[in-house]
Image (tube, rainbow, N blue to C red; front, side, top):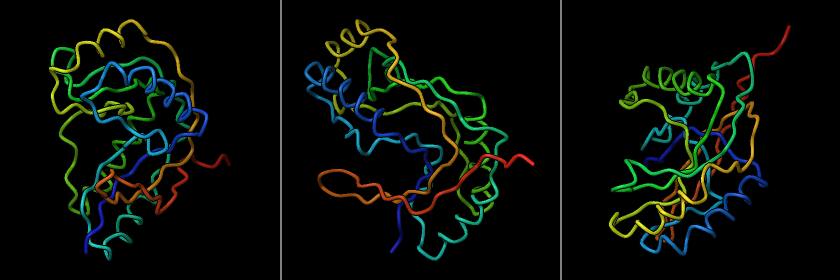
Length: 189
C-alpha cells in the first residue's frame, strides 16, 4: 500500500500559537471555509504524492545530500488569497524569506525528479495555508477583515533542517507524521 509523502519545514510552537490566534480572529468572517489546525501547519517545499513504501529509502537517499551555506530566515506577515481576492480558494499567511528558501525548494525538486517524481510546474511561493474555500462567493467579509488587519508581523523563524512527512488522510482531516529529518546547513570548516 502506497504512502502519501511531502517535504516541508516545521514550525515552532510559539508561531503556531500566534497563527491560531490569527485564525480565531478570521474564522467568524469565513464561515464557508475549512480552517487549518495550527498544530498541523508546515511550509511545504515539495509535495511528492503517493509512493510505494520500498521507494521511501530512495527518496531519503535523494534528499540526504541537499545543503545550503546558511540557515533559512523567515518572517511571517499578512494575509492573502489564492488565486486572488475576487474568487479566493485559499487563505494564506505570507512568508518573507531569504533567497535560499526557494533555492532549497528547487534543489529538492531536482533531486526527486531523478526518481521519476515530476518537477513543479509553478514557481515556488512560500506561504502557510490558513483556510480553503469550497464556495469563494462566501468570502467577501473575510477579504474585508484580512485587508483591515493589514500586513502585521506574526513572528520569525530560522530553520536549519527540513523533514519528510507522511500524510495520512482521515475523515476529520489529514494527520502529518515526521518520517525523516534532514539537516541542510553546510558545516563550517
